[in-house]
Image 1 (cartoon, rainbow, N blue to C red):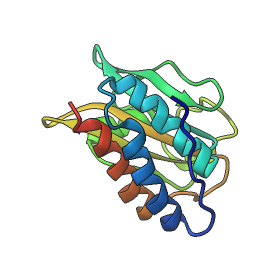
Image 2: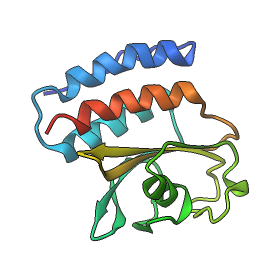
Image 3: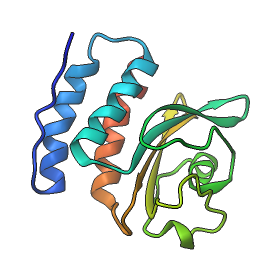
Image 4: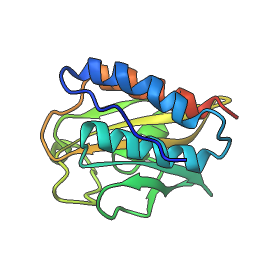
Length: 159
């Protein structure tokens, strides 16, 4: 079944307001989390043209690369390392305006300039993270944190 997004231009919140119900409809009825994560990545990449968007999933006490859109990426990240590992360890959203200023940043791509990472929490445990990178400084704010968290809830609480 082919799906097309209705891409909305303009203010970031307006874009999210249009995209969230489309993602909800896109993943409704699909029980496979990997398939849903893949479509979420594609939808976010298509709507916002983020440099990189993807998931890392907790497996054997490390983050392992999951579905993503963008250039090749680091395959594994240790807990507490880099922005993703730090978000996992702290169990909180991290917004990094300049990745070069983040202590211990893991540079999977030198083109990445800013980043937001949102942990996926189910039953009190982090099961993965959503990682979004921009090739521009200071691309993410609280609006992204709130809206991306809403999108994650569509996946995280389905099972």
